Amino acid sequence: MAKNKLKKFAAVKDMPHVIEPPFGEIIGKNHALKGKWHEEFGNSNPIVLELACGKGEYSVGMAKIFPDKNFIGIDIKGARMFSGATEVAEQGLQNVRFLRTKIDFITSFFDAEEVSEIWILFADPQLGKPRKRLTSSLFLNRYVQLLKSGGALHLKSDSTDLYEYTRDESIPEFNETRGRFSKEFDTDELYEKGIYDLDKTMQVVLNIRTFYEQMWLEQGKKIKYLTYKLIS
Image (cartoon, rainbow, N blue to C red):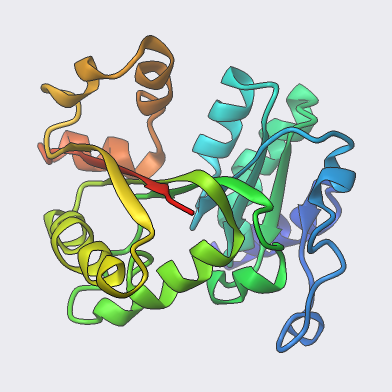
């Protein structure tokens, strides 16, 4: 298993669409691509982030559905993103990049209003460690620094704890002082009822199944989905 991971790490390093900066380049600094992602993609299309992207199923899946958008999958584990990065190379997708870094450093990579959407998909609910959750105020403060006005924040999760924490605690508390996020969509049973209230394109997007989602569905778990819009 260790040898297989090492092979994947090595393969990912050689892929031009995978950016893997040393920590020394970003701790307390801005990366060279900050504010220049449209130049990296060679167009001015909207930029969409998939945080803790794992194998990158959503970045790749959405890139096929929306060729007029640019997608960046972010994760610290390079061996996981090998799968998505390989598919991008094999299919010649030009609107996908993968960034191997900690999400804690996200503001080192993206400038103000450089990002149109953020997707958080089946993230670790960090039970007992709410500060580490990707929807805690710590991370929300980072997201508002890079999202465009009107930009979207999506959460799709099997975790009732993370879903309720985001909906009932973190975002309402954040809005008390910042007043920035407006809830656009909310369902605690996505496939049973919620998905039918969305347009056909979003139904297709939300039917993209990650490795982890498929595992949770096979265990009979209900999928929750929230969408918020950033208000200027």
